[in-house]
Length: 348
Image (cartoon, rainbow, N blue to C red; front, side, top):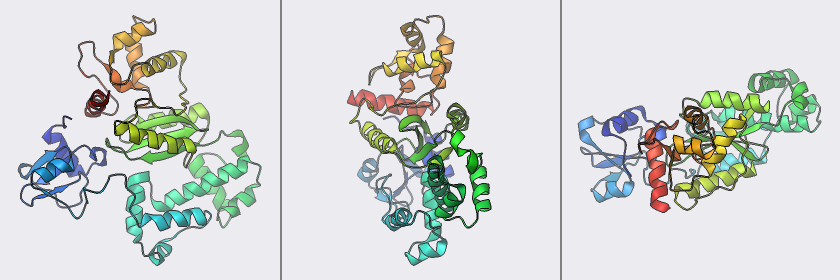
């Protein structure tokens, strides 16, 4: 697969841009070592690096893996030290796991903070708070009194619970009954960088690259559409989606089966449904898409609806190209669009 330009990759290396994880490997000629794009080692000079699409290529050219960023380790593999942390979260959901608790487990708190910031976009303490509020939200919807919900989730005072609830969810506990169930959000690692996925009542409502500029707008729209807050959480559909995305990126899956919830105008729904009819490994132009829904003169409107799609890959807006066969705009970046089309061509 064609790599981005050397200048683009070098800039990503300088920024330690996680969006390029899985896209390229950096090899440093002066040290003979190859690294991930996010390696924290000192920045090499541009003239001293070369780029490869895989660790195999770097090894074949005589480079050895960096001991700091461990590029041979699978990108999405969880570190062994994380297991006792996850077990503690499961066994004591209401307990605040503090830095000294982590040290007693033999774990460096700064290591935990970095991992949760990278993989969930928030600190470990913020992640714990979100989990507690998520559970409290559920118990309140089931009719549990506010006081009981607060103390059962480890809050020391009802006033503190009220404040945390209002700051995070934009409402007060007593009004939960009138609020929709939360949109569960999960950050997922992929060969094209981290993606943010969301489900609403076990239906996928969001799959988007974490660095997309429209992401904040889409998150705001989802909350308004569903009248629901966003909360980190787990669901069977998120687990299934993560497995199917992994299989897709491995070239093993051509059709997703997870149920979708994708609110929009009737016209947008028409366009998004038509997108799902484009077969794996094939492409269509904006004009062909407009013709297919009987709106021959609505090419610009079709392009706009295509750009408003918030469920990337599953609703394959990346399969739309220009009438001249050239790649046109894609929210995740043209280099990602090219990567996805190459993947599908290879495994069609």
